[in-house]
Length: 121
Image (cartoon, helix red, strand yellow):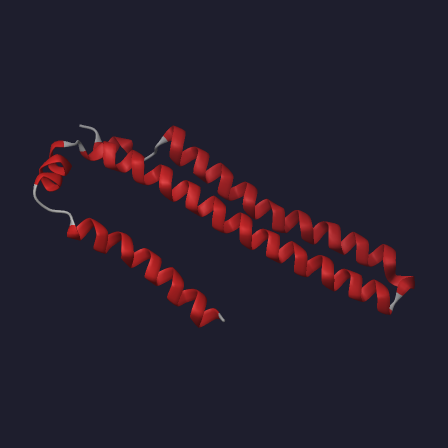
């Protein structure tokens, strides 16, 4: 499963490079005419959106597995319900914080653009 997922990710990442490499003729002249920071801003928007989508999907899967495990534990030992619920809530908060960190980093990349100083002269 992990190998298949890694293969799909590598295929998606290399397809973009192949598509950009296949561009030629007038497209290449237009690419050179654009300043470097225009490319940076468009790529940063795509990367921020892609990162947030991937992390949100993985967060949903992780939260589903955590809830399933907690319900299994409660079904096996009903007397441990309060402790399991407390640990579940703390775990869900940690899982959700990863999505919030990704959102904050995406917002920083989109609006603050810390690497703009390197591209704009």
